[in-house]
Image (cartoon, rainbow, N blue to C red; front, side):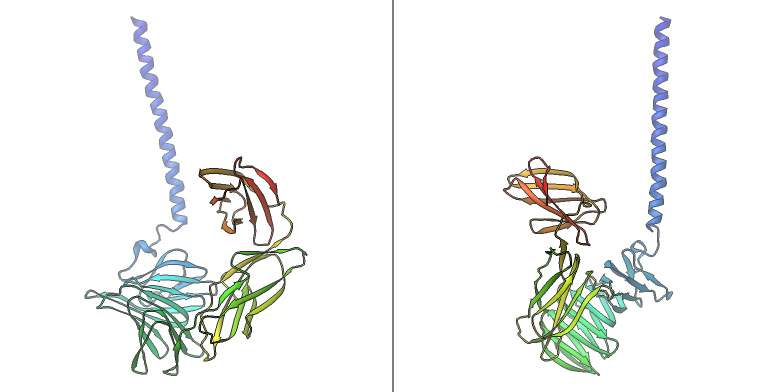
Length: 413
């Protein structure tokens, strides 16, 4: 009898000790998690008061940005660099550098896009008696504005030199201001604006362009669209077989108006077209083509705009990108952890891991490897093998023929 009692006591004692140990382990894990979590939050400025969590009443929101964007606070005259989503209050100045762009949402829901090398001042962004009033001054550069359903008892106004333009609902407009000449331009691709120049108001409607100089509308005509890039096509690849660079021919088509008489071409190493990255900046091209020689392997971007007989200049076309690559495969580029999952029929999910930021090309498409080097894409093909290429910005590349049945590399190219 005594032996049974002792055995029972021993088992109960062991259970208490075991649970205590488990509890201590859980507590230690929680403390470590709190320590590193708090450290990460502080490093990423989660507790900063100058963010959307502490946004002042009637402030605009910078909902996205890229490159160098700065805000000068009217209350403190302090200039801060935008590093995450922030607010902009009335009186604040927003400036973008050559590689900067910012998208701002106003109180009435309108979207303002500040283009590179531009400066705006938010004059008003308030709600009074149920109406929502937005007023922005464009000091220099370019500003794109999109309005949807503006409230009837509100207004949305863009100020420039010698003029102000009131945007109506469902409008897409572009505004340009030149600080050097103190001239301005208005382009309307959708909707309309009511502009006041020299005390007189006029309406600029859809597909119209107007130039304002010295307190009057100096030109008003149909809007011309940017030229259309043709060759090299976007995301195309050009192989350098000689190892001494390649010649590239650029070609484009004018807009439907047929009024363009000259073109301005830019070729750059970055999509921002910053002054330090531009390789070609050629204005006054009368033809529809241009040839550039001895381009070394790498990634390039190109865009252009056209000028009509009247002197009106279009906006820049959407940039197209192309790659010059070496003819031989680079042994330094490797891909591992290949996986293939058949989703059904001829549809496969392919994944792998390589160097972060490399371009992964397949079937005329491409994507970028994530910060940890991983990539995943879906492909549809009746073939049992798939050609995949990995490349960097310097033109180095490596091609792989992957078996969709075994997820193994059959050969390299």
